[in-house]
Length: 327
Ligand SMILES: [Zn+2]
Ligand SMILES: [Zn+2]
Image (cartoon, rainbow, N blue to C red; front, side, top):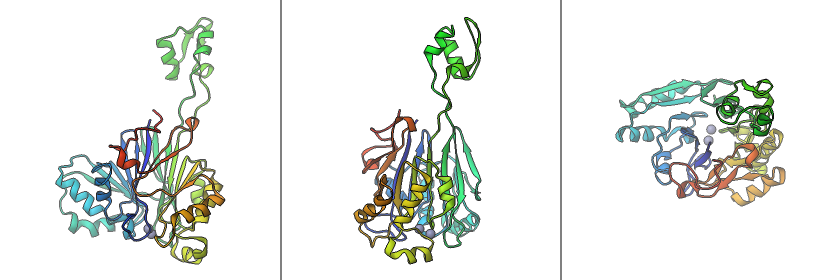
């Protein structure tokens, strides 16, 4: 069950030649979710995976560097005869944003719906959910998002089933579906032959935010935390004034939340990213600073750690990496 994160835009508030503004694509099995849609997101897709037909867009907040790509992407979907529905989620204020976009969008020929997500509200999917949590971005209505997979059933122990006199075949399958079966000495319950439930994966994205206890809670033991790292420690006052985080603050949040990997984004173009990364790693070692078109693949926890694949989105199609997947 692939879970792949593609960084389409990793830059700070303004795009640079090498970094586009905020846009992250998360693909889980057949579901494609775009988190923020900065200016030029469709061009970033075209330069890598192709024009991805996303199912859902989640907006963290409505500053231009997170939403300006929407009219262009939606118009292109329309011009290329998209028929599949598109759902767009965001914090309160989303209706006003779409009222403002309306003259640009005109009439679209595919179904478009918008949904407000307040703190703690979640969008349910088969086997996972995407939950909004309120972050702290200078008083703006701003959500972070956490993708939480459901727990998975424990590992089936075929030897234990055989020992209980269960014949191999359909009865094994029934046990793994959670059904009782007949063994040689009477009824055999799934609990007797299945290990404890195994945790699903968690990916958390903060959008723009000051360091926040809400992020630490939402990202507890997450496989991946994608965090605002707009400034360095020397510019800490500026970070506080503008509702952003320093690199060191992002690393401290990752440390507190015990995540497996921290990905820094929204780094101001005034800094040298290599230096920024060194600073973060002093506090939290497993930190990366993805560039546009990098991917991170996230295996199930028992199969290893998330892996950064530099330029992964340009070497693979359909958002599925050819290596580092978890089957
Ligand atoms: Zn921003
Ligand atoms: Zn912002």
